[in-house]
Length: 314
Ligand code: ZN
Image (cartoon, rainbow, N blue to C red; front, side, top):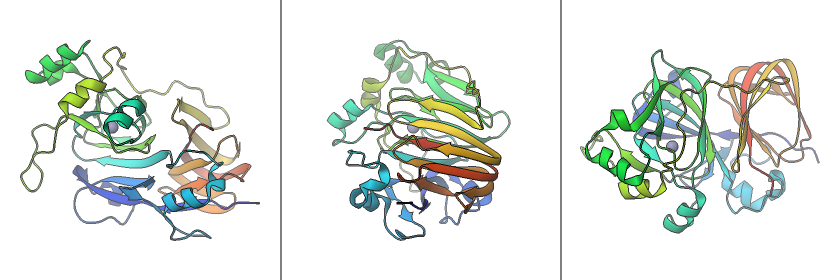
């Protein structure tokens, strides 16, 4: 049976570090206030996207996952595995780290851990980002935190438009102000905050920190990167950004026509530049959709750029 593309309506989240970029840059209709995150493809309980049109219009993605598993290659997981977001940071995000699946299952009510990756849609000149840290042990890290030696502790590197970063669980990281990022991650909301710049929320309170959990999960042996330049070679418009246990992420550039042969359980697609058609359906920058199982060939025409991702098969 031929399946149609499943277009989703984003869910927006207010954040202390957010702003209005999702409206001014992407043209989304967003709620008032500092909006930092667009959950573009999500079945997570904190932001479960609705299907925008077609035969499943109005259904939540979580519902579609539980009742129509055939659309998703019959994967066995009880939760939709991925979460695709746009992060629009006017100000710095907290210094944070995420657990892996094992730690999260034990300490966070059976939640998934969080492996995430960032494709940089835009970075203002001179922008920087935090990926990794310089302490080689738990004790050394704790000592640096106590003395607020953030400059020495954190691996702060320049970031530019078109960069890519894989953030494995246990990697200390922070997106900083002036960046717009397409994030592909495991469907999880477990974040341990190491430091939040002593910044106060609108009601005067501080956001909670989780130093003990952070110390537990930080990978002290990891080599920190020096930049996010993509080195993979583009083949027929497709650049493999990462393939890990949690997901594979590709950048797809379309000039005229590109054909993709299905080799995934299903494919999450986000148009990040330009416009065109996917199997005859008009799509443009800011659209997010799923090509379900049953679509064997995707024909992309026009002039556009997409980030596409899929989970591993069972
Ligand atoms: Zn994170």
